[in-house]
Picture 1 (cartoon, rainbow, N blue to C red):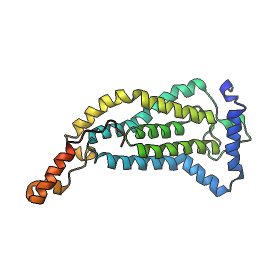
Picture 2 (picture 1 turned 45 degrees about the vertical axis):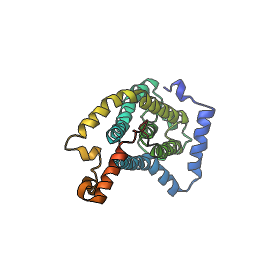
Picture 3 (picture 1 turned 90 degrees about the vertical axis):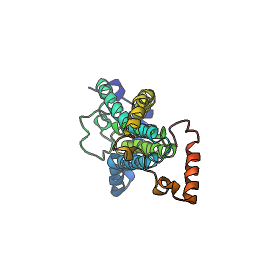
Amino acid sequence: MSTPLADTTNPDLDLLYAVNGLAKRSPQWLDHLVSWIGEYGILIGLAMLGLVAWLQARRRPDAPVAMAGLLWVPLSVAVAELANLPIAAIVNRPRPFVDHPGLLVLVDGKAGTHSFVSDHSTMTMGVAVALFLVNRRLGWIAGGLALLQGFCRMFMGVHYPTDVIGGFALAVAVVLLLAPIAMAVLVPFCHALSRTAVAPLIRAPERGGAARGGAGPRGRRRGRGAVRAGEQPPESDLAA
């Protein structure tokens, strides 16, 4: 039996039909492309952004702190997905194509699963917000991918707009509300790791020239410059 939330009419359903209508009027190759992007492509893109963020974070003066922020990215997504389990069970909203067979569904295997909130939207926005706390430029890019993810889920006919908005809201709440607690644990943890054999994963090794700064006059000048650079005040937040 459908819940009241599933009996959506007017703006929610109208927007879904408008976006899904684009799929009906599009060539088949474009429908397949959007389906692949909405299911896998955006997640792969976010993983690549995470790799770039890691490479940049290890070269920052506050590398252990930045790496702690990056560890919070997948952890926050996992927490948000766990929080979604009871929400989905309580709301018990069926997929939109169950109550509205006129929709064009571009992916199989979604029948019998919950619609609210969108897991894909939760994951992508969680990555975007958590990444923004570490690297604003990459966070903005991830945010654009998250918005594209929401569009793709409606284009594919598997989520209402409010499913997507609910996923975004859940992700933002989990990331921002729990970030102070997470960082209180992860920052000391990453500082400790930076003093172990896995230190290269946390902080990039110094260049050979800097390590041999006392080899000659030029080396000594480089060594003094490195000290002066190290004396600069740390950044006020995690974002680069």
